[in-house]
Image (tube, rainbow, N blue to C red):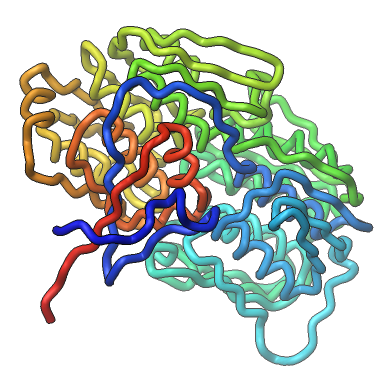
Length: 473
């Protein structure tokens, strides 16, 4: 592996990532404590939920602070195919959405289904599967090969008994592509498994107003990532949807109403914020994230409380959360409600004074990659002991000897990212402390955070080094 001479990300247009040869990688340059402020882009979870509600609303909606990324672009492209008009302002961060209304507006001519390419966006395929089955029409949702390995069978099985028509996940194991031929929902009660992804339940909740029915949804088994369901409920209400639920006392939700166009401000992405809070914790720094508070809709703001439990100091304001480093200690924590931050915490745990046990995230194996098994494989490249469990992992911190060896080594360590944006952003944190850390396929952060490398570079005030792998054919 040899250095090349591409410009640093600071010299590139915002949102771009250098691509060098057939395979690129980036090395974040170590330095001292990181101190500063950052405002991440809009929440992917909120942007795609707001797009669903706005698309099937009566009238126009204005969404501000929207995320511009692959996941939101495939949602916008798919909605355009059913006649939803979306205009962009402010470089795509403001969206004006002309809704098409509820299922009564569903019209389709011809024998061919609407073909929708959803890349590897879990929110898009799950939310659209539910929404389009309620709206009515013929559709085929497909994506990249990894998407065709991600289960969606539980959602399809929940919809099929209450839909007039047919729906199927046609890959082995109940995975996409998803084929839909629907005349809408019947309004009968439905049941959905809660243990694989809360997005199944969120998709069904948001689809009920589109169907024109009030629907009771029963949850079978344990529900993971409950904060995301609360987020869905609050966002639906902002657009006129109605939800009635209390998961502390019942395992069902009643949802209905009708969406009406509205103005909606999208919060910065709390999952993305976790990387910057973690950067403070592992470098002895102090970093504030603007635009978020503990009252945010996104449950991932709870990540800062885990850092506090590990020893970091928190400074909370109405529109800012700041993390100040302190000596890190290991913790035993259930991260089922903030599972998108497991990779971030695992990197922090390497620099603690005792092991960290992460529990409650068995469903992480079914994300963009196996975020338990593959995470363990990569972190072991440092020489760290990582114990893999069915529901999570135990991260044993790097020893003093490990840190000395890694600091003195001239051999690069290449971290594979498995086309998973959260792998890439988490491994970037290692480069803040250790030399020779190369993150492969850095462009994969474009899935949810195209500006990540540029934002990180501005925060640490030093350029990254970009590399290409030379190959002989």
